[in-house]
Amino acid sequence: MDEKTSNELTWSDFTKVEMRIGTILEAEVFEEARNPAYKMIIDFGAVGKRKTSAQITDLYTPEELIGKQVVAVVNFPPKQIATMMSECLVLGGIGQNKEITLLQPERSIENGSRIG
Image 1: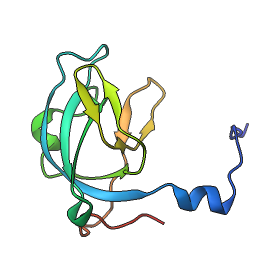
Image 2: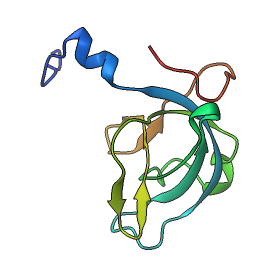
Image 3: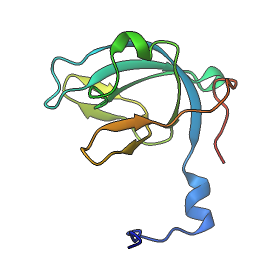
Image 4: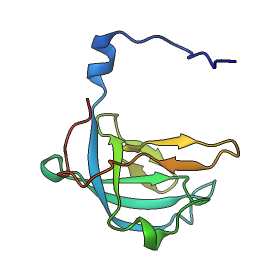
């Protein structure tokens, strides 16, 4: 049975979402977070470096995240998460057991490259 999407977007809606490629520079356990998470700093090239947190502790260690390229939404307003102001949203697929698999480019690409 096909899973239905919850809301349809217009093309105009989609083009407002600014998804970019970035490389994780720093990752550490986010002790203050309510749910297990990591704090990260991601380099988006000309767009700049952004802080974020992600609940990706089931499949990744902080050490293996360093240097990994990811896809993130960079034009949400900053959001307070525990003791940190998150500046982007890293994207991932949600597995059957709620584990998150990061979305990544299949080849290395320049930081800040836009997804479209």
